[in-house]
Amino acid sequence: MGSTRNQVYLFKRYLWLYDRIASYGPITFERISELWEQSSLNEGAPLPHKTFERHRCAIQDLFDVEVECNRSDNTYTIVHNNSDSSARIRTMFNSAVTLQDAITRTRDIANYIEIEPIIGNIAYLQNILQALSERLCVHIRYRHNYDPEAEEDVSVSPIGLKLFRQRWYLVAELPDGTPYSYPLDRIISLKLGQPATRPKFSLAELFADSYGIIRQPGVDSQLITLRVEREQANYFIALPLHPSQSVTKVEDGYVYLQIHVCPTYDFFMELLSHGEKVEVISPASVRNSIAERVRKLSNLYL
Image 1 (cartoon, rainbow, N blue to C red):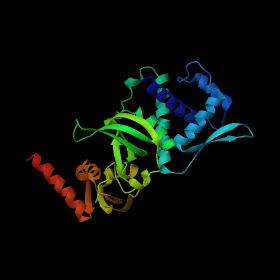
Image 2: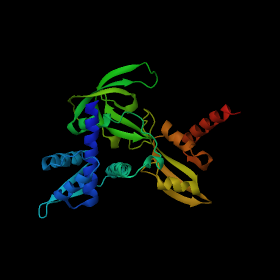
Image 3: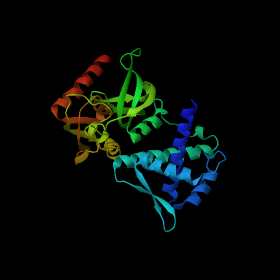
Image 4: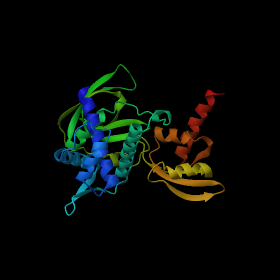
């Protein structure tokens, strides 16, 4: 239990250091030390330069950034790469740090904030990140969804982590080379293992044509056209369903969108959640699948 607390505390320190350099940079180590003295994470000890350098290396690996030092004035700056995924991760981490600072400094803040819970034991995240960074296998004990009594011990090679609908998933390669997604809330135990071979897949490749977490064998990606009520379309434009989404035309109070994805269960449930405001125009196979689901739902209430 103590080890888990230490890992979470260390991760919070990484977040804190990343945020301070990103927010204040270019920034000297002396200024970072001053801010550390004021931090709620500080347990009465200064920040040694050797510890700072270890944290600096860690956040470079974890957040896919460079923490550059300008030797002319000994200041540090965060240099980001240009990937959309890294940008989303940085935004999430910055939000976490900002919220933690607000909670620490503001009395009774819980009365003013309502947050959807993250499902699963996020304490496993630190070990999974270490396994990804050091290219290690992980040994997990997993409880299957279809049978709460069915448990399995397996050693897998982590491919990455994916967050979908407040649920973290470990995406890993099984011993036979098949990719599989393990929701963290169904992992009973997780331990680091031996060095792993490089996975055959990347997260970007596995989910390039996916909406959500489901990858269904035999379901190919298709170009899907949606007709969305103009007001509701603002939601889709602000939060695209997929990077391939594009607006093809605006006509008679409707916005027509095209998206190139695999029509799996996650995708159908998302479209149905918008009710009559979203209509599948093509292809006919996807339109018919939606219609069949609507008929079955309607029959429940007739």
